[in-house]
Image 1 (cartoon, helix red, strand yellow):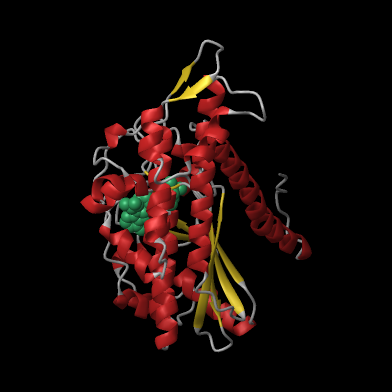
Image 2 (cartoon, rainbow, N blue to C red):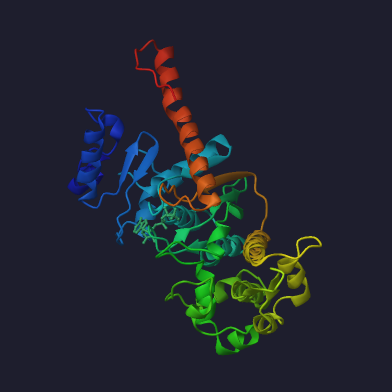
Length: 406
Ligand SMILES: Nc1ncnc2c1ncn2[C@@H]1O[C@H](COP(=O)(O)OP(=O)(O)OP(=O)(O)O)[C@@H](O)[C@H]1O
């Protein structure tokens, strides 16, 4: 087994459990030593620590997948494929559900890791024509979800701005028969406001910059991001890829979907003026442009009147933004439900939880606050499940150990 490894694979210690010194310095030094040789994975027992290489490594290919298939977890150098394979085989032998929790700071590589796991199952699990369709849909759902749920941030050009729990469902033979996605805490505030240097969700730019001339005309849009208050920067994303994926996923109401996205942009351009009584009045020209994509009368009621008394301009702006966030949030949930239409429920699942990244400095949004809280809770659970259970085992064996108290 050791003979199968190259000298390069043996750089540093492959499993932190075997480290002589349990200090932060020794931990980081080992990580650094391995990283300098492009060895981005290291185990801590059955946990996998991964460092983002920010470059393409030749470790994600069919040859590597074949190498890890059905092999004992510690037999080969640490790899995300080993983790995926271990979860799959344990699920089959124990016949119970397994979950892979991917956690880390924004930009750490969580989404990429979940994609690698999906790709591994797509190649390694037995399949039939029907299953191939399910598998392709699962893979195709990624670009769609990224278009509507990801955005450029200061930390990551393609940052997930929603939490995602995805499960892959298997029948008793171990065939992947379906998948299910649960989305939560979409960062809706991004629709109406982005921090300096950040962008709105990709789909807005894909539509404005990459949409066909005819489509833009129908939606009353101009091919100029600067024209829209909700879009701060330009982007180089193009539209066709997402269109193709939406079609493949049998989302037939694509035109309606784009109408809603366009209506959000139009909504952002609504300006309000104050009349002599301090009441908000809507800029009529803009509302006219937008009236074929949104119901103007309904909008007027939403934006200008509280219950019976009229809004001030500040209230009207607040109502406009709240409406834009709600419309976008519901559209995103609708899209996820559409993707989930492909479901066939299996007997056991392997669940992938990718909560979006922890950010200390971006506490402008309520969603980011909730995500940070969720990350903290998961971290606690994780410590409980690993350190505490380990401690209990030591105690049962009468081995002295320094107690961990959270
Ligand atoms: N294993 C990898 N190999 C090569 N590049 C990677 C790898 N993992 C991540 N990257 C690069 O880092 C970028 C950020 O990774 P990713 O989007 O997965 O981060 P994240 O942890 O999901 O961040 P967020 O919480 O902001 O969504 C990717 O777009 C990709 O360019």
